[in-house]
Picture 1 (spheres, helix red, strand yellow):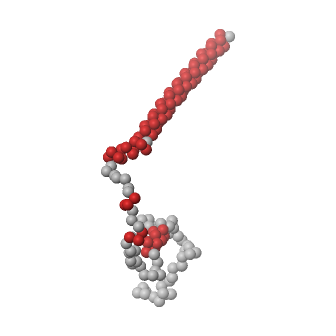
Picture 2 (cartoon, one colour):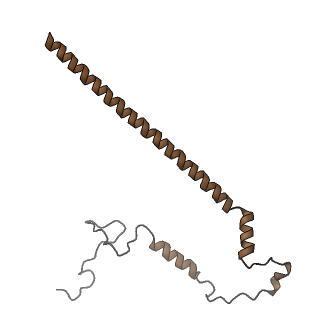
Picture 3 (cartoon, one colour):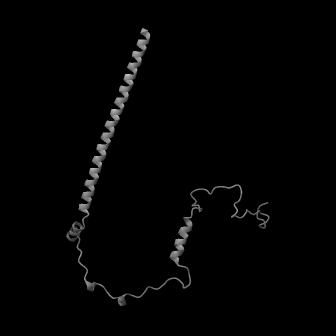
Length: 150
């Protein structure tokens, strides 16, 4: 009977220590959550302060005052504009009539080079065992009229 009592007392001590450990871990986690919430609140306050400072620095009246003080700009007068009849003649065209637009041709070349199926030469083209349907099959030497090979 005493052995049973000792066993029960031992189980009670073990259970009490286990519950105490769980309580301490949960208390530590609650403290960590509260600490993180406080840090989040501080960061939000800092963000709000920075936004207020940015709004103050970005105010149009302040920027206008700085521009007037530091930039030597003068207001535009109505007589600074000229009429369209005083514009110079259009420059001569250096392309032949009916030919392709040279800038458009450059853009087409760039777009063709940027196509995903094109290779740049920095990596080898993957070798395939069978010729693809859109690529012609390699011709034999006898069909090409021969060469210097024997």
